[in-house]
Amino acid sequence: MTAEPDQEALAVFCAALPQLRTLLRGPASSDRRAIVAQTVRAARRGEPIDRFLAQLGIGGSTTAPEDIESPRSSLPTPLDSERRPVIGDYMCPKGTCARLVHREVDAELPTCAIHEQALRFVAEN
Image (cartoon, rainbow, N blue to C red; front, side):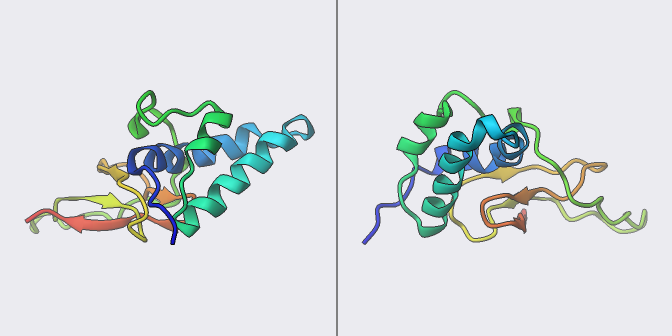
């Protein structure tokens, strides 16, 4: 049985993952790239990732997911002006972490770099 990873730390890592992968592309970053890969595998299995995050210098309480830019994959569908828009937020597609993203009108679809899927939309009641 595996221990559930810290939700906040996992959300921070998920939001930072695309930027980390971009920053660690060069040959000098192979050790840190390996740590990122280990972190992703542990997160997918639901295992704790705190020790990996410490090695990467990422702290769950010091960096908010909203503060980290992540690449977007598509623009939203234009709204029909006569219809009332559905309001809600986007969450982890597998429920692995507590990441919550509010999508602005002109923003692209937020994605989960851990599971390599778009975040799941949850409408407000």
